[in-house]
Length: 163
Image 1: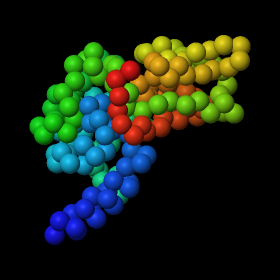
Image 2 (image 1 turned 90 degrees about the horizontal axis):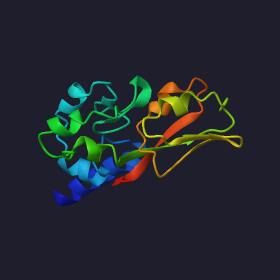
Image 3 (image 1 turned 135 degrees about the horizontal axis):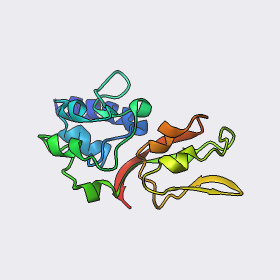
C-alpha cells in the first residue's frame, strides 16, 4: 500500500515541472501533500488566474491567460483551509517569487507596454533593448498580459522564494 502511494506521488510530481503555483504554495512537494483541491482559492481569485486541477496538472495552478496576479491581493492565501497556500500578508506576497518572466527578443517590438504594466518596476528598456531585472520580478504576469507581440513568457520556479 505504501509503495503504491509513493508511485502515485512520483507520477504527480513529474507533472509539476512547468506548473506555476499560487503565492504561498512554496513548492510542488508541499502543495501535493497538503492541498485537498477544495477550490476555494479558485473561487476567490479576483482575476481568475488560479484554475482547477485538469488532465495536465493534478492540482490547482496559475494560468495567465485570464490575467495576472494582482499586487494588492492575497485572497488565495487567506481562504485556504489546509495551509497548502500559506497565509501571506500583502507585503510578504509582494516579495514572493512565484515565477519568472523572460522576454523573447525576436518577438519584442520595444513598445514599452510591459514596462508600463509591471507593478514591480522589473522591466528595463535601454538602447540595447528590453530586459527583466531578476531581482525585482516575482512572476505576476502583468507584463505578459500587456504584451501585444507575444514576446513574454512566464516560467515556473522550482521553489517559491522571497526576493
